[in-house]
Length: 375
Image 1: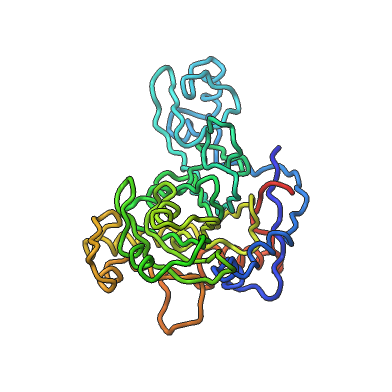
Image 2: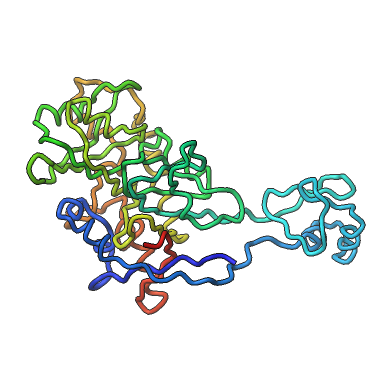
């Protein structure tokens, strides 16, 4: 018996795509932290999980033309059938990837692979993105639902002291597509630094700074205000090297005191998803997420650019804007500009649609597939 994810807190007012997403302005204004304090998790309920798509062995063999179901059961009882080199038993189920032999001869059979699953996780500070941490620190994977087959793969990483949106998927192919440098999916961060950036420093970060592992550049930098020496900025970057945002700012003499990822490609951190909790995307949003990565990859192929191409420090801002992926100019929801946003779905950025559709299924009550640690 497994635990069913808890329900998410209902949002105030009418539900729409914009209100269901975390925006940069929410971080700067303090609403991001206020929502965390106000959100309450409902008690967990224990329910029997649905049976995964794993047909019974004797049925699969009969469909493969090996004989009748009764004959297959007889062979199983005689010990003449093995699954993954282990003797089969009556009532055993098989799944995609299993190896079945009858009398020592491999048998070909068809079992549909499990559907791709994607989770948006709100990573808190103090957790590592690792299945096996030598220091035994808290890991993001301890809060996730159990997979019947395979394991969760993170789409990139966030370091120990960085919080915000972390995507995880059961599909290695999708994970590679979303984080491979050649696709250049844009990451958006809210970053608080010590001391305001001068125009010259901003220009340097946009043109590229040299790090130990090569050149790095921001796609955009927007002021966000702040109090005293603490200044907020919204930055975008098209790759995800280790501690890259922090190292870039430290290279020009500015320490980072807080770093929050609020968007990855077309997926924006949903409002109401508190730290340590997760939201599982529905099938429609998974298709949109995959399509967004595909479209950005096509844009790179069309203009011959790559997120890992050498950076020319003398290149003009206009040239850099021209060579950016089609989705890289996107921001969190703003007032309509008259032009369609290629990263938006029918109701907003990916993630908002999942929340909205799940609310509609139960009379507009927010019961999406949520989960996480209890507070």
